[in-house]
Length: 344
Ligand SMILES: C[S@@+](CC[C@H](N)C(=O)[O-])C[C@H]1O[C@@H](n2cnc3c(N)ncnc32)[C@H](O)[C@@H]1O
Image (cartoon, rainbow, N blue to C red; front, side):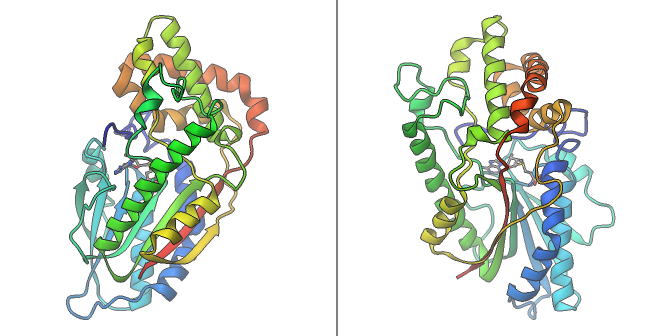
């Protein structure tokens, strides 16, 4: 990866562990559907050694990954009704806080836990070894930022990290990169999965026709961008450095995401569903919003500009978010999905 985008680790007040209930709520809401998909679509042979391999790609730290894994494990046990040994592979980039992840493994777990650090835009497991893979809130990342976006003299320079100012050309370059990355992601997962293994994808994308800047995610990204700009004007961070700072994030529209999977051809789409649930949108609360985005974006800001600048930036983010609440209230809802893919 040219740069990284890891969540704030540990168990402290800024940590992803403490502020990822929004993401966790989706897996909870999709639990029954995951159970049903595994029950009806998983067709693997456990006769030789009773071993099932499960992996989470982009696991981060905190309860969400354990919940996703347990949901899959229960569903597999429920389906096969036999003694199965489970091996779980936790994947994330190597700067993820794997220490916290392993320290907080559920003590009553019935699986062997293994960390497989490295970019999921490459193989992290041997061929034909995986029965079920899951990736939750992790396939809206790109592996790199087109370099024109970082160059102030380029007509494609994207000021700060704003998404409101996205020109059509910037949007297209992001999408081109996203397509390349998703193609690789799907190809390598297909190599790792055993024949008929399942890949579960959960997360958020944009409804068709909706721009990132019209959603809470986009509005919060813009607020973080304008806060960084002010912090640079105050001389706390270097403007030149800010000019090159971009987020490795791209939210595709629903039909685009579906088309990318269909065009790839390695998988059959068994489920592609919108998951509607009570916690599907962020609450209209500036503290909650600030802490959620600090836990996800704050790590990148801190690694680029230092901890102190990150804290100052998010103090500003909190103020601006409070002022922006009336606009945020009018944001267009995102599209949260469960996608179940069966390897062809
Ligand atoms: C928003 S978190 C989601 C964590 C967890 N799956 C959940 O649902 O709460 C996204 C995770 O994807 C990881 N990630 C992003 N790009 C990655 C890459 N190229 N390879 C591996 N992990 C990546 C980040 O480090 C982060 O931990």
